[in-house]
Length: 260
Image (cartoon, rainbow, N blue to C red; front, side, top):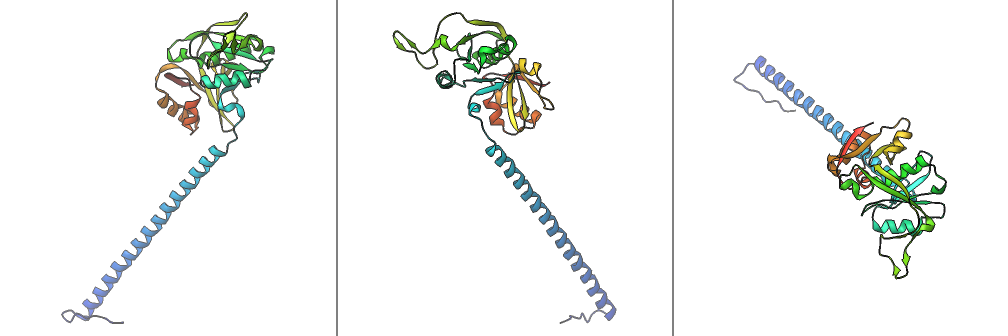
């Protein structure tokens, strides 16, 4: 080991100089070690966040989807399934593939509305039918037109067809015959909640009759908030991160949201 001596200084001064330098280098060494430890902690934190986010994303993708979830859907307070078309093509599909003899067909009395099928609806009571009518009202152009209510009618399978004496009707059009069951001045409004990791959207009538136990409930009515902003707020209220799913389940128009 080589030691440099400053001959202009005394032995005591040289020794003190080496001591001070040793202290300085020791502090630098401690600082470097501390910085390295902080960097490792930060990297571990970032890695942990990525792992958690990946797990959440994987859960969203792996969550089992039921066949009816490609439509608008909900279960009535009596547990019956109601499914509604998101567009004219889905309205056609519901009529041709999912409308059976014991079901009921619901439609708002306005141009531009979802066809809603109540499975087993022939045996439903008046209150249950009113829930489905409210669902059909909410998924109609009445929401976008800012109408607080709209008339809705229900019909049986044997009253609805696609063909006339002149041929088949165009997409989204149906031939109806016989008496309709009317639900006059049906108010618009839906509610959302999360149960077992799945987003549920129900008419306000259903939420009022059977509030989900232990779940947060967001009430959605006509308002001035645009869909994307409303979806972000609903996402925060419910702790549900998939805003695309929320947007898909909302009617066309603007909104007012509140916690129940």
